Length: 302
Image 1 (spheres, one colour):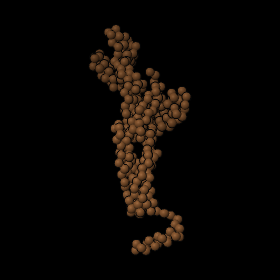
Image 2 (spheres, one colour):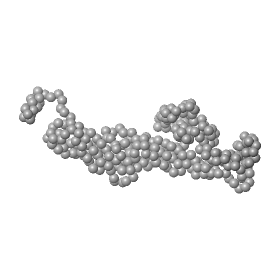
Image 3 (cartoon, rainbow, N blue to C red):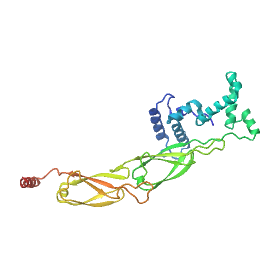
Image 4 (cartoon, rainbow, N blue to C red):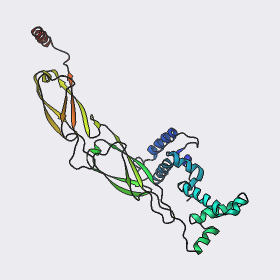
């Protein structure tokens, strides 16, 4: 595996802050996104590299390992353990103050990770095949709208050239993360594959506000319906309902529509509630006759 300069891929310096990394990733991801570059293999490859770079540099611990170990960053802990083990099992190295060549040091790690150095050949002659290590976990963000996650939906993601069909249950929350086992990076020396973690970013282009499984909506109510009562048709996310308005309804009055809220995640047929808040809308541009009638009503009330 060749060394990849993740900083160069995102167009940032090694001293970049977390905020710099986030801004650079978003800018590059938008530019090379497959939806904006259909059938462009070069853009697709670039998009994969951008995601890979972000997976490493956006996590402080992973970034620290990458800065120190480069392409082998995900095996940093194994390198450290190997160093300690080597120092313990090699008293000559301790007595001589670590007086062995850099090539010997490389061979030692090659033997550990199944390389082709002298120590690796020695391990093979003893029937050893190196230590297997789990592959890298991948992280992706999927952007959806509130209407899209009101029902179960399907998406196809392209991760490192592989199409992954994903069924997204209704009721997914903003910021929620799911794991798809075995869809991460390839393992090393026969080790298991890593996993794919998908985080949902849910935008809201509707007039509803969501709080967990409940929805909230403000509806205008005219003066006459508020005073005398009547019927009002209100839109929910998937239908329309008729509400009976009680006479002398005040502005700010709340009405609960049971079971008309958001679906409960992975609970078929269960929904939250919809809360309607009435906003009294006063008439404007009154005619002379209307003003006379309001004056008459005022005199009656006083």
